[in-house]
Length: 331
Picture 1 (cartoon, one colour):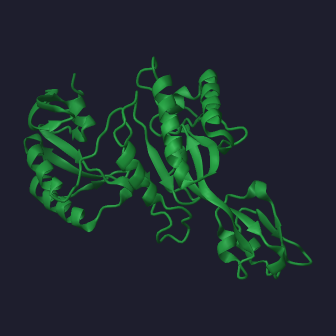
Picture 2 (spheres, one colour):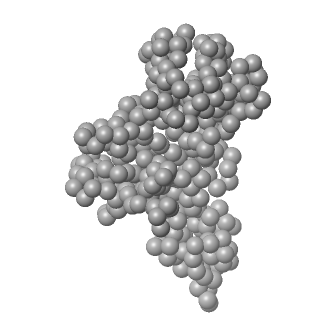
């Protein structure tokens, strides 16, 4: 049955191209899974484009503009998940739009119960706060894992530093860049710059010598002390990804929590494969349920942690916390 707010009460339209492996009369849900979202207006759809990490080459952007002017409205919409959306598209133009976009390799995104297009900040390429190469990892995930089918949607994000612009705690699986600092006393001149640079109180200055007193329990692993030190007395001890699992936003948000830290680029695929495999196996019988909801069941959380320790051993932190509700409507 069509949404009662959709003015056009039909729940199917006939399209002349293949969407989700189907042609001819295709229902709205299937079209939505293929990135073609029914609007309120009769015959009108929004076409969601695939823009991994929010990065769109200029050649593709030019083609998107050309297509939008020809087949869509007077504007495009930038979604919260870094997609470009073309509203007010007549379904009769789907085939032409696909053909035009394909000339520049621009793909239409997808919705539905599957691994979605990964999101990311700019990472360390030009952002002075960036610690890890988010765009490299987004490319890997998009090429290798995009479209994997699950009981519900599965979102992955990458943030280059602890500012966490990509909100790793609000995604089913999130990777956030981090660096653990190490201090060399021999080269330190006691200038106190590092303690001023640290806004978390993780570094204090000795009253007499000015040399740093490090409080690791307050450290966010941001690397500000390393960047600020004029004598390079603060160095990288280790660098990698903090991994969070089970988050989601929406009507009833869930906060994902840390399960690992300083994970290498090479280990990211292993984390994705082990966690998604667990979700596929343990999502059976729960219908359209996100992994964060399942992980709040004590027995499932125990099973999840046990699986991680078996497969990833000491990469998992000592006492990881399961995802927690972050209710905003019934506080």
